[in-house]
Length: 325
Image (cartoon, rainbow, N blue to C red; front, side, top):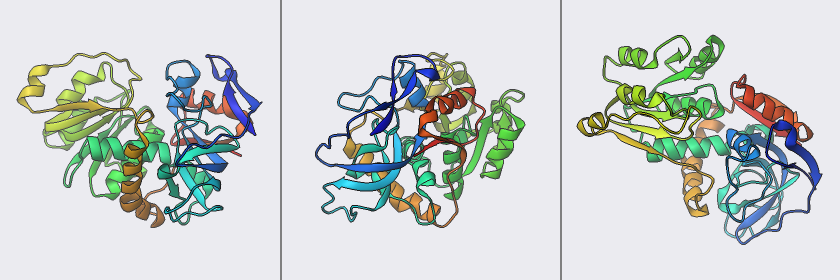
């Protein structure tokens, strides 16, 4: 099969088209003939040597795919060979065929193409796990999404808004802020020209927000602590602004704040299977009803994975960057 491999750690140019044998299936896995794969920030980190491959996972990049099931044990799943599914995987998505745990496969939502469905797993699993499970966003609560125009951001905005929450977001340009508001953010804040703490406090009558989903870290930490409401939760999913920040522990104690975070890739199949079940029950109906939608910025052929990574690193995109086979 054709695949994209990382020849050595470095810039986008180290992504090279190659020939690889078909993946060997482990117990509980299915083989998917890939129609499309998503490009995600962790793929960039893996390419630069900053995101180790979990033991036993494919060394090929790519954490989400959609396509046709062509092999594997499907007993008891309700799925059959030939069905179109999307799947969250630990690696190997940048290829013509990909092995995926059956428990991490979801049917392509009615009305969506395989390309659109391939844009779902990484962001939707991540958002559900961190905003609704770990962050415990509950009825009547508010959410601030840092990086609202990213794939994660547009997903978090849409799901939270569709479930009835007030949502605020930050983004780095007027166009990106406008896109966030069109997707459901009550107010998008240009972090280059505005103070998100001041804006959020004004919009919430001084209270602050209940949950912040953050992929920045660094010097955002002290400002985010001040932006949280009492009993608020700050959830980290990346550290694009640095891994260290100042923490006022007095505020954490007095105001009963929770600071947490997670990475999804190394978690066991059973953990991801539970997220998949929640998505199918709570979010797939929203997709099929057209209340939320994948946002795709640009699609490249598999052989142009390097160009896709260059676009990802430019941060010029709004939504997802995709590879199509």
